[in-house]
Image 1 (cartoon, rainbow, N blue to C red):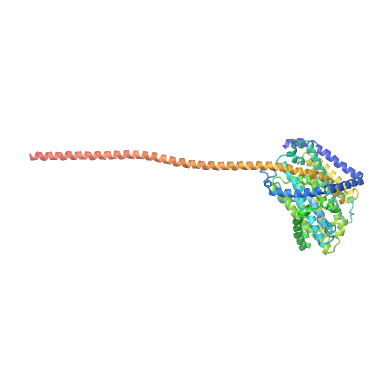
Image 2 (cartoon, helix red, strand yellow):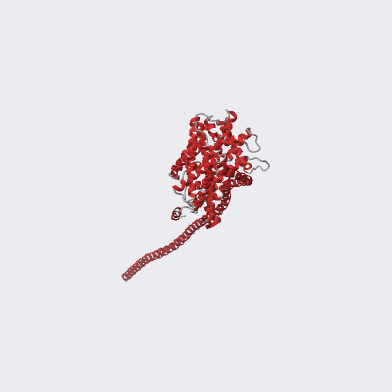
Length: 591
């Protein structure tokens, strides 16, 4: 889309912004006016969703992982997210840092300790609680929920949007990916409906992260100070962070988000190294190897296992929640990843977005979860009981058992705070782009509206019913279903685009090869012709020169021989005359 068209479109407020903002605002008002009513409706919707579509969440996420792996190793992997001459805008370090700081890092920090410990006490069906097997299952399932599956979900949306933006010159909208299927209808209500569903899913997913961050910061402050860990403190934290992220948002992606992301990845790396060094290092190493092996061995059974012959709710409240949360995050993460991934090939993109984060997830969960389990099983204990009551205290309770706990706890709080700010900053940018007809420079006023709406959504979820984690989980699972279906059709659409473009690329490569062969043949032919002509001309020239030289030589020899013969004849005649004269004189003398 050309710049003039984009500018003219972004001058007016889009219908997608108006409708989606009104719907989110209505949800916020519902939660504020009648939180118990919202909680009851969400509870019924959640039960119906898990019972009816739990199998779909499990199957579709497994398919996403298989699809992106096959895509990366296929010939499609050579296609570039942009024009053939485009190259990456950001370094690998900054790129990977922004991937984590965009929001998924909040999940690592929140669940890195909590999941393994929770699953140790409340394991999946078939494991005995508080046993060695449940501890291993806790590390394996924690890694499973944050390794390949979530990043496969994000990479599909990110890859698609980067391709249609930078290769096809389409706006940064989810609906742009459907041009091969819908054609110009993406500019009508079909496309707008897709974008509205994407905005609703994104706002809920981001609100879940807002809520988790507020819960953990509140828990950390209560652990370090005398502040209570309650909803009012959490709402105050959300209000403060909203102001901070708006300051960052004013700086833009290249300054605000990039700087905070680089700081955050350094802080996260330092905290990780600290726990590895001062914690149970050998136990962490053994946990990592065992978790990695168990993950690789069991990824297919874990991905395709349900409990049709039991009443276990474990999958619904854990695995299916995470898959739904990641799917609801997909439009946000996808648009943001697309924004920072221009110029990379599909294979390079998949390496950075799929393989590296999956590996780091296993390292992170093995380190923090392994340390917590070691303390629980072989040390002072008490972490599991604390986490069961207040899951947001898991990280701080673990750090408290290690040296320099006051410093590392403050460092962890700083890490969560920066993750919170960068995820909010990224969310306001992405939602602004999605509701500004794909503009990569949405107005500050639109970003402000979305920042306030997301903060409001997180607040009412924390206040509704029992509040806390359960409300956040419920919202994610319900809103993710429509977008999961959209993602299936998105895959069909991008395969159509990739197939056509790969064929065009192959045809162009074949044409270039043909032209190259023709040029080479032409040069060889000309060389051969030149050689033959040279030989022929050489022979003709030789004969001509030879004939000329021979004729000239012959004339010269003839003249020389003629003169010599003349002189010889002249001498002979003179001599003969002289002899005859002498003879006459002799004869006269005799007489």
